Structure formats: C-alpha cells, structure tokens
Image 1: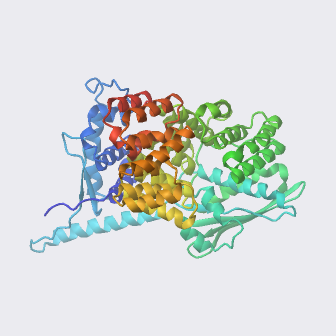
Image 2: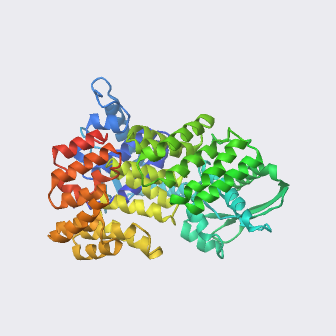
Image 3: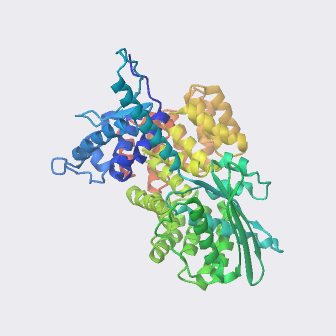
Length: 584
C-alpha cells in the first residue's frame, strides 16, 4: 500500500505536538532542528538540508562553519532520531502523521499512519498489552487536555467617569493589563486589536469567546475622579458564563500600578498558572504615566501620518520622569508609524535613539526590542533584527505584533516556512486584526500558494471591502493562479495605475496599456516601476531601478515578488540580493 500524502497543515500540527511533548519540551534546540527540516522539506528544499546549512540556520554557526571540527549537527540529529522513536512509542502512537529522520540524511520522511489489521489468532497476552497501550494513551490524552493552555481576552474596560475624555485612561488601563498578562508563562492572551473590536458594543461573552477562540474573558469598568480611582473587574468562563473571579478596587490615583498588578495576579491565581519572570513594575509619577496613556491613546486612534501628533505627550511624560522607558518606545513608534512609507533615514534618528534609551532603562521591555528590530530591519541588518524579534517574543510570548513583524522579516529573507508559522501565530493571538491577516496572505502569495492567498484576501474583504491592499493581493494571487482576467479585474479595481496592473498588462501582451502605466509611475518617480520593466522584458532597466532602491534601502519585498521571477536567474539580480544581505 502506498503512503498517503501529508498536507502542510497536518505536518505543522504534528511538529507543534512533538515540540510540546515531554521529550522535546526541555530541548528547544531539538524542536527547532525538527521544525526547520520539516518546513524546508515541505517547501521543496530537501536538497538544501546539508550539515553546513543546518549548522548555520539552526545552531547559529558562522557561514564558514566546518562540521569536521564541530559535529553539533550530527550529534543533534542522532538525538532527534532517538527522541522521535520514543515519541511514537509513547504519546504519539495514535498520531495520524509520522515524521521520521532516516540515518544518513537530514531530510525527514513524512507519512500518514496506516492502521493495520492483524490476521493472527486471538492471543490474550497481546490483547492485554494492547489494552495497556490504550489506557496509557487515554491517560496521556486526558493529561494533555488538563494541561491545555488557558486563553484569555481582555475586553476594553468601560469608562464610567463623568468626563468622556477619560476614555484614554480606561483604554490605557486595559492595555496595561493585556501587556502584563502577555508576559505570563502558560497563558495565551488575545491581542488588543481583537479585544477592542467589542468596544462600545453589546457584549455576549459566548460569542466573543467563540470569535476570539478564548476560554475566559476579563471585563471591567473604571470610575475616575480628580483624586480617586475605582476599578471593578470580573473573569468569566466562556463555556457557561460562570464567574471565576471578581473584585473591586477603590484607591487613590497614585495606586494605579498596584491595581494593575493585583488584577493580573488575581487572574493568574484563578487560572492556576505561574507568573513569568522579567516583568518590571515602574515607579513613575502618576503625572508621567497619565501623559503616557494619553500619548498611546492618540497613537492608537490616529495611526499613520497623524501618529506624529502623539509625540508631545510622550515628550512631556519623559520631562516628568526621564527614566520611564515605555514613553521612549512611544516616541519611536510615533516616528515609525508617521513615516512608515519613507526610507529608514527619515525615521531612524528618532527611532534608534529612543529604542537604545528604552533598552538602557529596561532591557526586558518587549516593545523596546520590537522597536530596535524595526530599526535593524530598515538597515537590512537581518541577523540583528532577528535577535531583537526573538528577544521580544521570549519576554512576551503573546506579543502578536512581534510575531507579525518577525514574519515580515522572515518573508523578505525568503524563509517562508518560518514566516508562515509566525504570521499564523499573530493571527491566532489577534484573530480580528486585518493587518495580521494581510501579512499571512502575503506569505501565501510569495510562497506560490495562490489558492490560500485568494481565500485569505477574500476573508479580509468580507470584513472590510475597502481594506487598502487586500484587493491588490487578491488580484495578484488570481492572476498567478491562472485566472488572469479575474486577476486583472481585481487589480483594476484596486488601482488602474499601479505597478501590479502594469505588470499584468505586460505579461498578457497588452504592451501599450502597460507602457501607459509605466509612464505614469516614472512621472511619480516610483521605484516599483521596475515591476513593469521586468514584465516587459526590459531586464536591465528593471535592475537599474532595483539598484537605486537598494542604495536608498527601499527595496522592501522586491526579491520575493512573483513579478520578478524572470530576473531570478540573472547574475546581477543575485548580486543585488547579496548586497542586501539576503544571499543564502
């Protein structure tokens, strides 16, 4: 009987289950090794799974790494084979997917488990042994269910104050509790974007839990006067609406930090998980903290080119307390959001200095590591950026934005299997974030998984028909999925003068229309006119424009664009990749 093919989703689920099993949970290196070789194999890169490559990619060895002097890969591969054998003899003996690592190869074999029917006579000893295995599997399954990670959504606390402008304070308190809980080991916390989707709306706990995939929900209210603060909160089980915990706090305003801390610890105790290490409790003055919350509220409400208006509030917070690290991060994020579409030089002075100062004040502030990662990304310092993303996620495993932007970083490096994992995690933590789903759709598009890219972009448009880039992704995915006319219609609807539609015209022989789009892009001095040049077969001009973009650090995702497939074999294209630090 031939082995059944294993789907990508089934394989990745099996990898996650193996990584969480007792034999792998304490060995992050083996879990990383397994995940890497499986993802590379599923992406058709089995031939690249060599000892030198794995040493660099998995174990951080230098590019000149010599496996004869350092046999770490061979030793870890032997351990991995042993651990896999133990896993499938124990907790994995009923799994539908089997992953094997044959001796003499680093390319895993994935196959669907095929139940076998015995034709031998009944033997009570075999029956007893089989019963023992079934009981053991049942107990293990029960323990796995009992150990399932609790998942919580923190809904926006309701502002009961007489002044509507105190909304920033109730929102800020909610944010702080989300961030505090995000650092708790063993607790899955839904991101702000998804939780705040219910702000000001009727709150059906069961519906919220279903849509956010949360087992418990925290809701509360804030009443603030000039000197006093009253906070009420309750933790509700989604399955039956029962209250796990509730409390009210009536304190002076200066006790805000203590209230946040008490709420977080009470929730942890109610869910019986342990507080993670590394959380810092700031002793900033209330005035500084209040200004910081106003700045974050402004930043979250405005976004984009209006984000710079939050800067004075963060600067005032720092004037009140020069050691309040989160306010420095706020300044950096304001620069980043305000100048997102501009090259790094336009935002780097403000971003880098504030990230460095925030990390100097608090090396365990995850937002500061994310900010520094964004700075390094903009400078094409991929290894430095990756280190900062990983640090942010290590400190705060539920940091959806860090997973999302780390996925960005991996996508640009064509590490698409890893990018897919990070973007899926971002969506899991922030299921209502359309930008997280957009990034997932991009990974599908750049991986050549056009069917999934179409489905994801259509899901975004079903929620927001005017979401800026979803129709563009949909059009490109349809076009490269051989549904060219449908793709062109979507691209026209997105923007009749975009480089994507220009390239589509060129690829389908509509050269005059492609030239008209190209002329428009050149008038605007758009670097992405290179896409149309490439599609028209004018490779030299396309590469000239890419050279320009590289000098200005504006290449973004150019190297993974499907529109540039015809350039990939060009020596000059590969040289540009090398200059951008992307050569493998």
